[in-house]
Amino acid sequence: MSATPHAVELTGVLARAASSKLGRDIVALDVSRSLAIADIFLIVTAGNERQAGAIVDVIDEAAGLSGERVLRREGEAEAKWILLDLADVVVHVMSVEDRELYALERIWKDAPRLDLDLEDEPKQVAV
Image (cartoon, rainbow, N blue to C red):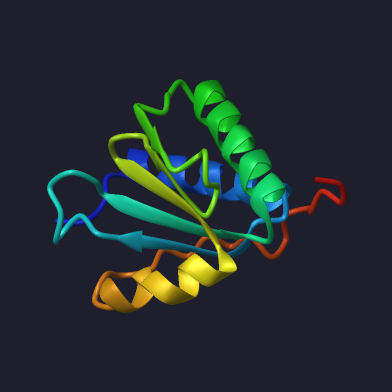
């Protein structure tokens, strides 16, 4: 079983939102074959705590505009690894250090990557 078309579409929306706030190294992993609780992990690196907050805010806004909502949030106080649970999609906004330390891509190395095609997306200059 692979991720639902809805989850893939939502992931694209959320990834573009994260990219608009200069989220880096954005990766989407289809974890649906291994997990029953989510279809996709979207992983984003934030350069600092303020940027992590901006990325979280824009993802929350983009989800709302798509008719979705964040069901659970964790880690906002520390802003090192913020997890947003949207049921089918779980977003991980991570500091550079935590992303290297926890290496989610290595843990989920067998999960197929989604092509997000973010290169042509305009980038916002200010955070």
